[in-house]
Length: 134
Length: 134
Length: 134
Length: 134
Figure (tube, rainbow over the protein chains, first blue to last red):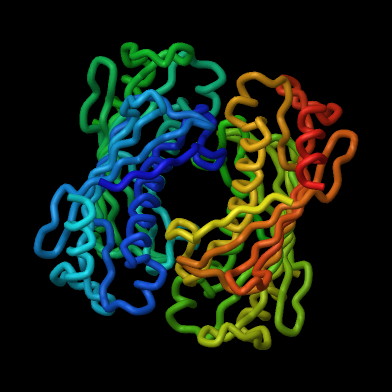
């Protein structure tokens, strides 16, 4: 499991006084980006050096309780599945009382950086996912 | 069915050269907002006058082909289901060749504006959904 | 002058009930993108075919009145100055009563797409700006 | 001076491969939000308890060098001026070599939370600004 904290900022919210629904997805993805950094596979360097990309092909997101400006969340990320050409991550967002306020699932597929065609999951990525998120 | 066109703008995209995954969800939601306007239930006036809110409690989104800056999309919105306290919408995003490049499903629940507790779907909203999106 | 209308959407707003301050800048830039489309210089095709880019190097934005969800704005764009290597645009945002609720000024510079070094303003762009926005 | 670090994330970038111009402004504002938290004046609690708001009435932003995905920035925030009813902040964004890649200036005004009319800068806010950012 990979765990990160996040405090809700003004730009995450909307006029209903809670977070705009896409913010939860962005926060989940940021957690994944921080994880990749920690595994030496940060997306910035990766886009320069690597011949693959890992676009998102599916997401699901559930919202169980209103999340407001200033709320502190813990984001827990786990590996759902690492397949031949794709992988799936699960995220739980917990408030300071430990209650689950939201969940996210993402599916990403490995593609060739040039042709954008599916390819096997790169070894470095599979290793990072399976050894750190088991 | 409700239908709208959208051209991808710079702010929708990311450094991978395609739209950031949350943009597809925002574009779907904008279509819903435009629909509500057309039905006389625009979210701006509604938040002043009405005693209910309709927060999103679930979304799903699939990405079937890369969508790039300047691409013209048609967004088709249909009613998936109108229940006692919630409703579900489906969105298809089509490119100019008519190919489906993405889909979105959203579930929204009616809540009291003050307590944020579930309540029956307001009649004006149910009517707008069932009479225009059947 | 180039003129466009825009209705404030949920994603433009924040928990203070008004538009998040960066939304005004994004709305101004969208107006510029739509203008470029109308002049046959849309940013999408341009990034594929052209050897130049036009990054923003300076912006200023003033907020004169609260702008809320559902508000209808007219955005008026004029050319402030077209120099050797850069150009400046002014935007006025007006509400339905004709009152100015905000202004934006942007400065963009022409650079080589490869080296990101300054270069003379391309003729096609200079023509589009001076013949349509005078 | 208040100082914070920030790593550029995918959602900050656009198809030109650099940060979208509004991201620099959002990053500056996040630094201010974190500062307010540290001073016990976090915007979340403030919006519940306080009878004032501090909307932005003016911003300026300069972009001196391309900033890319994964770049590490240091954001330095200083008080430019604390007036009777408004205050102004300056932000410098530095890369890891210490070069200034961007600057931001914001002006915020104190208003009554109900009427949105100008009011004197609250003492708690003036103290936080002048004692910590001198």
